[in-house]
Figure 1 (spheres, protein in one colour):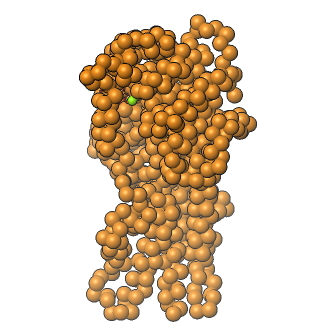
Figure 2 (cartoon, chains in turn red, brown):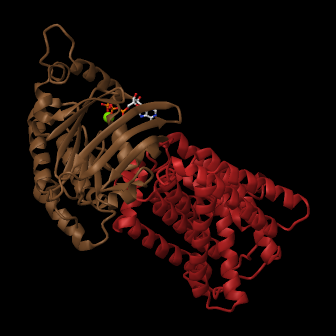
Figure 3 (cartoon, protein in one colour):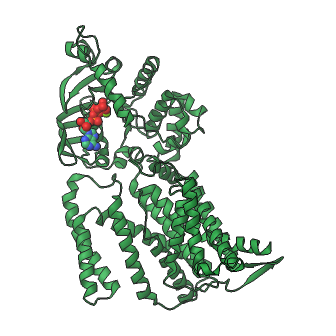
Length: 353
Length: 275
Ligand SMILES: Nc1ncnc2c1ncn2[C@@H]1O[C@H](COP(=O)(O)OP(=O)(O)OP(=O)(O)O)[C@@H](O)[C@H]1O
Ligand SMILES: [Mg+2]
């Protein structure tokens, strides 16, 4: 009994991290119709920025976390503006950017300077095409092109995965969280402080998000945009603002997930973004466009994964392999999809017109 | 809040479209040199068969062409004396232009109240939003009764009221209406006609796109008829009402045996809704 409860608790704490990551995916998907594959990169950035602020600069950890959420949100918004709104739309700018980056990189430049220089040149190219485009509307009412944005966000993920270690190195780092190895024992249960805080902070963030989405003007605008993007534009809702808010929220929750995932017993490594691979099944489970489904999907995946870890040795199933907990997650996802092809809470048509 | 339009300079058009051409996807020429004006305080109606380009004309005014990969390749659109060819929709709404789109396009998953809030997105001051809300409610009391219902569960007539109410939340100087009578019972059409007249009387200029010519001409100060992307007739409501061709094709009172445009319309409609 205790073992089950323990497994559930640890699973929920793990699932909480997936939940916020999935909320990030879902928010962007709902607003823009694209999947932001760079989300893992923002998890990484968020974790390292928290590390930097709390360890290198010596700030209070919670303040560092808050700052990191803001900083990551800002980076996410800026990246969205540059890559998805500008570069994507201006073919010349994007081509210049990619070609130059490749040229510089393969000629022995470091990642950071290669990215910086090529980005600059790409922006100039963008400016030129922009002049030409001026005659053809402001680009503010159009949706993001789906295919191009997949390429660009995957590209961005790879760039981030290079840039982060080039700044902070590959070594395992200590996040500097006040939780460390501390635990509280209740009955036979071992409640690690890191996990308790993970759950607490996640719940706070989710409540804040749902309140914004439900009650504020921008929340109404985001839901309206999701339902009918043209009709939203017709009301004067600015897609620029809606996109920015969505990417901002996604960036902030990514930082929260990254920080909690790298804290406690876990160490901060540059592989932290891999957590996203388990957030994907959670998103599919929840149904892609439902924030509530995102939370539930995340928790289910976390619990399933953790219970597998607990019971696999117990039931003599070690022959299934070390990483089997990551497989059960996908099995559960497949089973749910067989029964409910649109996920637990998904709306039927996933494609918008 | 916008000042009610007292027609001080009736000569000064609130909306002026000069000789515009609109192209979709860089190749499909849909409007071929259209000019149209709406003076302050007027109700102007635009008639035309399916596919004539009426909705396209409205999109050219509201900045929504971009959503459909269309663009104005020639001519100018000016709203309140300012050239607005390349304005984005949110700026246009803020400057006093609101629209009721074809097919209502309410946010069916949102509540009635939230739909109205979405309509007031560009309104900065809370007081202005509240005033607009009161005006909308006095026009459509049912929207207050159903404030918390999911908009998708409203009846067709109520949804149209919501669509108009949502547009009015921005307190527009000019209201564009794209076939508001579509799919409404005759009695309701009369009711909406009166409502449009009321809205106009309260100081909002109206550009009304309609296929129901009887209804539209009965309240219009002036009217235009569009065919294959061109304006082919223009005049006062009474003039067009008396015009033989108009009577035949749009009012369905032509010589017996000749097919009226209305038959064509019902057929095309069904086809459109099913896709
Ligand atoms: N997004 C688009 N891309 C390409 N062509 C389009 C697009 N939208 C409309 N058209 C074409 O432009 C022409 C005019 O269409 P529009 O919708 O403006 O007509 P309408 O007068 O509003 O007709 P209806 O009474 O059926 O609403 C039609 O031939 C239509 O096929
Ligand atoms: Mg139309």
